[in-house]
Length: 346
Image (tube, rainbow, N blue to C red):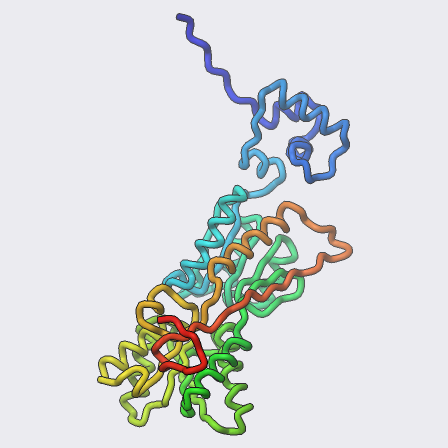
């Protein structure tokens, strides 16, 4: 039985040579959403059919001078919040044919240099939180698309974040309704726009209550379980702890619950505790918290970045920057006590 010889797959260069155009024009002609004359598109499609050419993502990227990779910058990669955001980001990027390069800025001596170096290796960049200064962001945005996650907007860049102030007010009103009056906020507002919004929202409720409540700010070294345990333990050991601990995220809150347990305190009888994020562990711990769409944050950033890369807008007029605030919701559980007017999860 005769053996059929294997033929080498056609390349984008061969298609371009047969059609008499550049490889960039071949790439544009094979995409229906790009401006190419009908005659040129006809020639390219005919050449591709004759050569049995199947364009790959790397071939398209080569033709268009791209990397077929997006970058994302995090303050840290430890913790479920960052994991959820990156899962949402990577899933959408993969669906759209891009790989993902990840940079964590924690413990780096020159963060700005590291971020700029990553930007040179990717087609677009997403940055979460205050991982780089506004000047660095603006400089990168001048040459490639940038999307900001959980951060204040920077001119010329898209930004997506979740609601903080309004839901923090709802949390404050709920706790005041329980009769709690002495509060401590665990977290560092200066390190995170999200934490700053949560602190500001809660503080505004107390101010509106005609002084019927006090709020102490307790900065933490990080946002992990150990930081929450240390901060809450210090407060408890000082004597006369607050009525309620308002923690900037669930990991701090879970650490605070551990400190309260170790001190023999009843939650919420002796001390109420709340968090933010609604991690899976929060449900098991009966933690009152705020649910936010972490995967949707990453997915939205990846989708917007892909649109900017695929359909770059003309420099004049400048493209309008997208702004989106994803909704959050209060989830009431047992760690702040039952409330007769609330239907709460257990």
